[in-house]
Image (cartoon, rainbow, N blue to C red; front, side):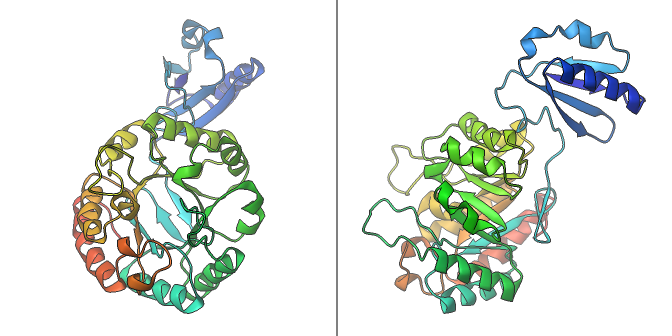
Length: 336
């Protein structure tokens, strides 16, 4: 339930109403807009009559929210959420590009790529230390050594780092990581999501391969219900009958999510298509559709990559893409 407070209401009157509702067992989520204060009631609101709330002279209107996700719901938080992560803005009028290799392979590799993507305008560095692979015989990442190399690259370049967590046992290792990525395979690992809700770190939540947008928002709700409101949603393609690309990039998810939630929405064109020559076109399309950012796989020697080399672009190709999407971002009122 949403309670819209009249603009001229006194703070003490709002506090009295809030306390009365909390005494009835409701959790109150406050959102201060330009003109109105919104009180979002979280709990079993079927037990409360709308007329009872409307009778309060400070209440302008009452709206029932039918969706099961509350904190992620735009009705509870009309303004877009904007985060400051390591001095870099995510959301709002900024287009945030996260770039780097699929996996950290060596010190020379990650430092070279970090320097290159920073020069081209990337705001954050991505890289896998722990890799979820379909085959148990594939490269599984460098583990803690990979994390140390990412942190070293962060220290030298100033780029905040984004890397994927696999399970709860790894959480203590991520204390210096700027953004914890939850991959498609873990997007409905509710035990992990609950624990990440107890942290204050930004969470980049990828859409599962067969996940509806409602399910994606419910996964975000698990994190937010634990007290962590810093969630970034990532569309990375879904599994369909089409085999021409690795997955099918659902560009319609961008405006739908922007309509339903205040959370930033970014797109991963690399994993969505699995084809390096598709990355530029899908990046431009994602920005034109209103995405708040991109996550692009970049490798200095794709032909020698230990993981997904066929889909990675070179630093030179990345630089060219950045120059082109800057024009698309400007049309959308965003800047790199």
